[in-house]
Amino acid sequence: MSGPPDSPASLRASALLAVLWGALALLLLLVLGGCRLREGSSEQLVIPEVVRTNLFVAPGGSDANPGTQSEPFRTIARAAQVVTPGTTVYVAPGQYMGGFQTRVSGSAEARIIFVSSERWGAKIVPPLSSGSTSGWDNRGSYVDIIGFDIDGFQYQSGTKWLNGIYNSGSYNNIRHNHVHHVALDIPCEPAGGAGIRVDSYYKGKQADVIGNNVHDIGPLDCPHHRGIYVSTQARIGSNVVYRVSGAGIQLWNDAHHVDIIGNTVSSSGQGIAVGGGDFYYSQGPNDHSFVANNIVFDNKQGILEHGATGRNNRYVNNLVFQNGAEDWHLAQGRQHVGTIAAEPAFLEYSRTGTPDFRLSARSPAIGRGVPLEAAEPDFEGKPRSQATGFDIGAFQHESMPDGGMENQGFEAVR
Image (cartoon, rainbow, N blue to C red; front, side, top):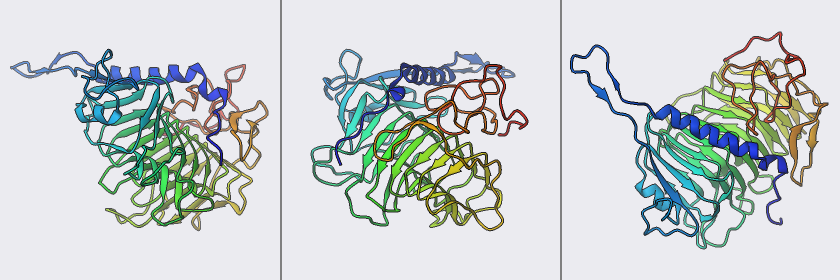
């Protein structure tokens, strides 16, 4: 296989950077609060404000530097050694050696944020001699990883990556990253891996995997490599996933209460696999998972359940079409509702090139999603609301001229 294909122009639009900075600004607003007095206390205890600090990383920096904007670090690994709760690490465009681990945790009031200052501008690649099975191994909690390009294609020597981003902490955000060409030429073994893996093995729980582009993962016809692999509680939304040897999105181990909403999954072994088994800490089943408003198109299998699954899992308003063996395979008695069985009419689709998964004006996915409360923006940052309508898939089209929706008979859920 040749080098990674160029991303479509739509995925580089300046609107995406605006959304990235808007999301970051919102996070900062949430954690930056002024001092206040606690009511009802005779001592009028002052709750101190969170003082955020900034660190900077750049290709021309040095790890002997203090990490300031004028004297940045050279590596993300060095910045990760000195972060404290409330730190934002800004990583300038350029190439950085991967295979590092981040372990420090933030808090609910003072998250640790690693952000590429230009979306996908900071590229993480395998080092000359790799000693890790993951491009980025995060063990900390209350950590955000935003806007990086994790490119496993340029393997040189040593241990080959099985995972692009491996996360085993709790309450973390993995957003707007580009994870691709990971584990393409390794033997197919049960250990497997994923583009983005959210693991409960180290007792991590709850993560958001939102707005990522994940593709070209795993050796050909190997079911043990997944695009997004989750084994705990999570929200998986507005991701684009394609050309994955196993499942584009898979739930397993201790997964439960997972929302899989508004993703586009194509040209993979399976589209979305909901299951539980090989439990670490629970006894299962995977229950109360919610799969809605996803496009699952042109995979070997569509949406399926396997292993231990509960009767409260729901499958609502998904477009599922042209999946080779079968579009649906749910546990006996389980039903899917509001399904659209039609070609999604992307702007441009190719199994081998760089598809443009935006919806054309004739797409049956436009306005057919179930309305959701507090819905995530789409892949490009477009809002999803009663005003704009709720489209199926990772991309929101345009609002209708009258501001209405084709599905206005539905009530908003969740």
